[in-house]
Image (cartoon, rainbow, N blue to C red; front, side, top):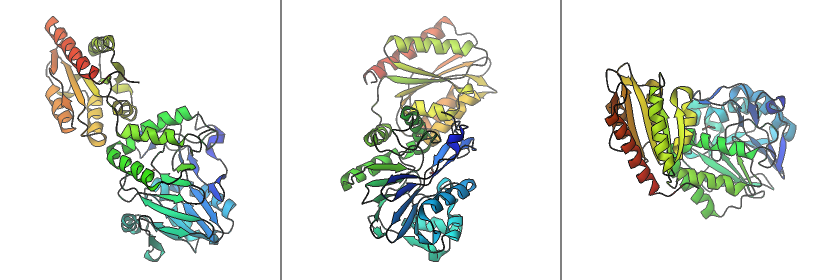
Length: 414
Ligand code: FEO
């Protein structure tokens, strides 16, 4: 899977249901999603055209630099852009709607449909004239003649204004960021056309980077969709594959990631400047694995936090092992702690801390920061000066044993 594959750069419009077309684009130019998260295989911005007997609606858009390709695809399926009645904004973020001002210029008869909260932000974000903004309420429907769009408010996925749009006649749920994944669409757009295992892994990383903080809202949204009894025949997110075969799998994945069932799994996040701290890591790994705990090791200096967050999201405990650097926590490890504070705070997970130093400890800085991020700190916090003494080694083993015994209470991971 490579975004540089020419087939990954420009897929034509694709019909996904009767009168419904994928008019999205692949972004193979960006290196970082949100200027934060690596996307070595690119990302897709999925947009859709719903063509009814009395006009067309465009569901979401694309980032600004790909507007031309998006508009040309809309022309291909709609014909005259004057037939576009609505541009639906499920979520305002520029990766979906930096293209909208240009489409509004070209589609002169169109108005945007947006949630109440979205309408408040839209005018200032994209300078859309007030007279071309129409607020839609939760549950409201609009007609395209033989097609009906229904709006479902699903706030805080991951902005306050987010909603989904449901096409009643086709059973298509346009979910925007929810159920999305990194990765350009290289070999097709449907779940049964692509290497779905790759996209499901990238969906986990996407979830842990973008949505994890709003897990409660994800669960509320999934519950709401289920309670409404919407029959979903096609699940059409705005990033990654369109689901027609394995819809329940991606919905279950989101539910499981939002409410992870703790199991005996730990991530060890470490930094080692000269290899000595790594020896401590090996001791901890050995003790944990001996007692049946699954362990992922992350060399923080050589792993982008995007990937670390994905592993930590599925772990009941995190062990931080790091040297002191300039009287502070080794910067790559400190960076992971900062990211956890911003993106995954308040889950009550366990953290263990081992600090190695030559002339000044920094364990307290890590403990304080982790406590603020909502971690429970497992005792003993271990600080070792220079080469670990036999007493230090005993403490490290004791810490690992205690962690094993806490994690084993959850049972092994499936
Ligand atoms: Fe894909 Fe929140 O934008």
